[in-house]
Image 1 (cartoon, rainbow, N blue to C red):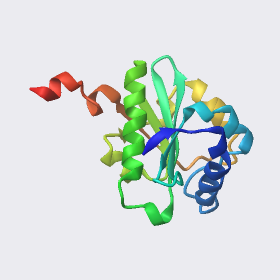
Image 2: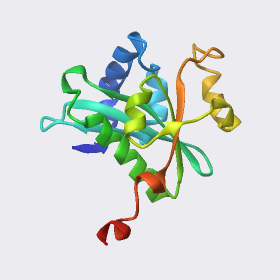
Image 3: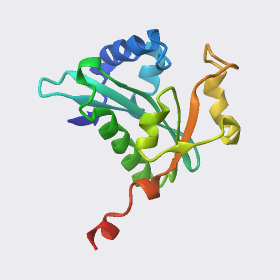
Length: 162
C-alpha cells in the first residue's frame, strides 16, 4: 500500500535512505530535511505498516518537479515497489498540473524503464542547484540527469478507454 509519509515514519525513512547512502547509491537525508520535506514523501508499507520503500516528489519550479530519495529495502526489491512509487509520484505531478519531472540518479536504467530519458544537468533551472550547493558531492556530481514528460508517461484515462 502506498500512502503519504507520517511524522512517525521519519526515523524508518532516515534509516532506509542512509543505508543506501552509505553504499553510495543515493544521497542521504538528515532528520531535519526529512521533517522539513515530509509532505513530499510517499511510502510503500506492508500489511503490518512496515515501510518497504520510499520516494519523494519535490516541486522545483513552475512546471518542474524532482523525484528524489527513492529507496526500496533490499529484501523487498524485485516486487515493482520502486516502479509503483515512481508512478504514484508522476500521477501526483500530473494532478498538480506539473508536466516535467526530472531525477538525478545512479540508477538511470531503472528510470529509463519508467519512461524517463537522458537530460543535460545544465538545462535544469538554477533553482535546482540550490539543493546541489549543500551536497557533499558538489561540484563534482556523478549522478545522471533524466527527465520525463508526465502527460506522455501518464496519459489521460479517457484516452485509454478507447
